[in-house]
Length: 120
Image 1: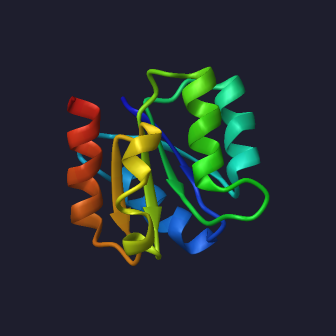
Image 2: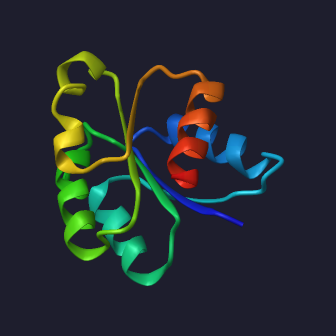
């Protein structure tokens, strides 16, 4: 069973992703973090197969979080999401992220991106 950490300052976004993947036929376990700092805390005490993070969060942005993840957990895949997709789409992959999607999102598109990243 794959374990996903979802970091987003929006409770609604975290809830939708968590509910979708935990009810998925492949049976995911999803933990939530309200920001990058909480995500790093959870990464320090648990093992995850994937991180999905918003870019624009208070405290520590998703871009800063990616940097910390790549330092401490270089093999851990990261998918970023953003409501400002166009502003970031050309730069995020240079950070070593594995996937990127726009908000608002279609859950089937998120599912395909997660499966693609986990299978690569």
